[in-house]
Length: 371
Image 1 (spheres, rainbow, N blue to C red):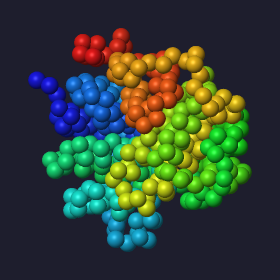
Image 2: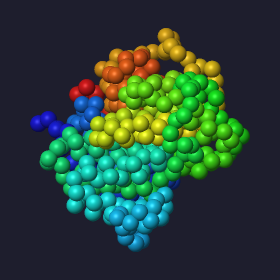
Image 3: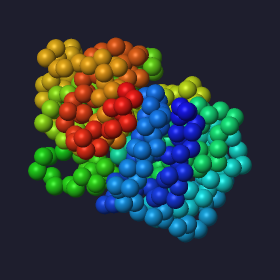
């Protein structure tokens, strides 16, 4: 009997029920995101084994206990808890209550403008987890379950608990292209010994001279959908320009804006440009933090010497490789490729699959048998 998307996500959510937001020593958990991405890639049959292995392999922190209730109707009260991870348990209780009492779309639209400029939260994973939770709810429709709503509550609570804004204006006022901004973007001194986890919190960003004014010098988008394609492709190329760099932190400059684009379908039009600006700022912060500049970052054309799989080959390789980031970046890049068929969207996941060790030693047995 075939496994449906609904069965697969319910199975994954049941397996992860009760797990905390982060894995030891302090990185975001990926089991709900990877599970939903496998479903989006057309492989719900792989979800049970993949989620089980992921959960068994990674030790998770417990969910923080609530400290005191958050009054979501009192802006001063909820703002005082924003960005305070000690209050994430309070945020979870608040969002579980909100989602039990009101339609999830209504809750999402109310909180989106409050959270959007903090989309860097948890190295952008809060945004990405929200997208996967929303897409799952939308796929299920009227039959959405309490576990699916609870997963959205987890994503939004994580966003609130790890909330951090980038030090740039909320509006663009310049005339530069993305390539011009990338070339001018300040970078962290390579001798700066900020730890990897601390880099993901972005607390160093206000100390970087000229960062906000450089980022704000981008020309405002004339067409938001085209601007998102420009954005994802620019940062795919920037990552391809650094073949020797550990790929995982910077890959979120692809998966985060791709996730933000998905969210436009659930938001009123007046929130589309702010969502683009926030995603762009997060991409710029990732590049400032994790990359030193080189001229290939702003290369206009794809490198012909890089191997370019077909979309079908890429899916097969990603599910065989089964690393959480390989799955997620493949699914994101295939969505972007469908809108703008540039081979770099296929080359980047291929690069990451070639670089990272596979999740299952010897490959994924079920993927081999059924792909």
